[in-house]
Image 1 (cartoon, rainbow, N blue to C red):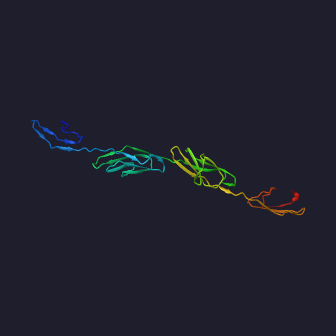
Image 2: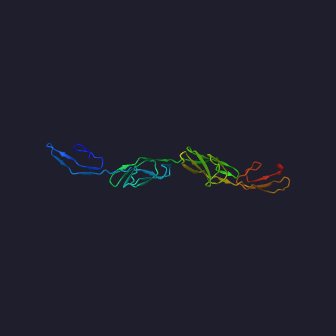
Image 3: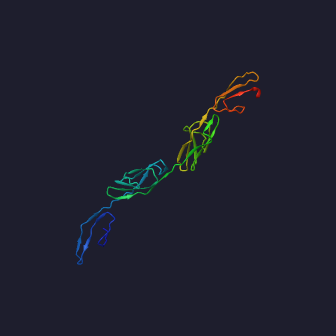
Length: 239
């Protein structure tokens, strides 16, 4: 139907094609008709189940529009949907029932690394009752802090430093600019009870005598005389 006068033609559209032949004597012959069918190829569209930018540990499902077969790049999967948990550029090539294939636009998946954080004690990890110590969150890429005590957020504890006084489990949760979160437990403190000092000894004695005083309630002792023994002899006349 196109009126071309060459021996060969290139056909891009559906239709019924025939050729008329004429020789040098102007004799004319007609070929049989050939019906050409050009199938329409539907574009391949990829949809995502959620955001294609997420934190490490997350995932997103990419799904191709309906077709007869699929091949994903770069991982080579051949299902209509794939689960993605790594950064990369993802493309699906789909082939329909007529054997026609086409590829989707590239989907750029970005997976953010989690922030790094640790917690340390600024001082001794063993305290006496009534004493306190600071805990410090150490991180280079955090924008928000939240301290937890035994898994429960501490109201107002949103700085890198917190002052504590008990043996609870303290956890720091940090959030970076991408919304990614990480956490770390601080070393557990040991809180010792304040010992109750007791002195045993005679309270009455004769002039010139000495008495034995014995202290208890602790592991280390220091008397007003400077002695560090648990028991001392005292002569009141020398005091």
